[in-house]
Image (cartoon, rainbow, N blue to C red):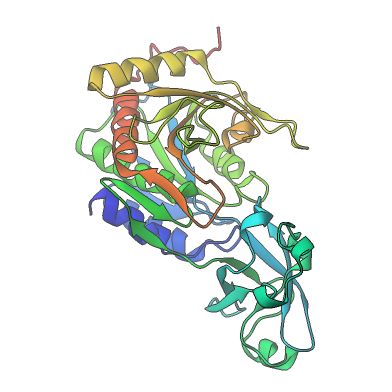
Length: 362
């Protein structure tokens, strides 16, 4: 399966945070083509292993989160409308008029829309107002709360943007959950490359849960694996749109990026300052492979690596990513060439690791 077809399949699978079952089993089956063994752990992480040729070489965990942000049902009105809260960082200004799917208790996803006041009845002072998610309602087409319950939908059921995938110009695509199905596609592609050219290190490929919710799923996987090195594959913010070109330098189609700084800064006082040896290794690997690589430093972003780095006696970590536009919206955009190049660079990095690599920060 080529990386474009793989990405399409991944983006069309629903996987709200905490409900990643479909994604997990798809990823397990796909990774089983390349790994020596694959399992799904107790909380839902997919963990695949390719055994290395030298047990003295540091072990590596390459990981990407499987889940996507969405909504949680908190109230069902008597006339069948749902009230919801955010499940992850939903941008409220894009919500009215969106198509969704709502997951019922049996795992089925039901089509729905987020209602918006009819334009003809909207007062002038309302037209430029952003409504909080708690004031919006989801319309399933149901006539009553009883009909909603008969569908198997109740308090606590999640919802997500209706999955979509579209090709744009050239190698660029648009749709839902590019963050982080792009990382998952690159994870699989990296596994396929290392399957053909087995590294010295034991390498664990992990699809993680809960990233959009609490960022702790990857930490559970790392606690079991106990890696020496962890490479996180996720989005970096693209700065090639008119609104962000003065803030970030990374651009679509110009190569994957290493993230030199992430810090959430909005309540979660955590982030990642990468292992300098891994930064140098990534830059050298890109040069050796003849591939472009970009640099990123971002306030307001946090990845799974922020918690993985704290496991055990400390894990040497590096965030590597692919530029993405319009993150956390239903119309995220990326360039598939960046995903392929990310896979090539990560596989080159891993192939260069051996017992001489220093795990200490200095």
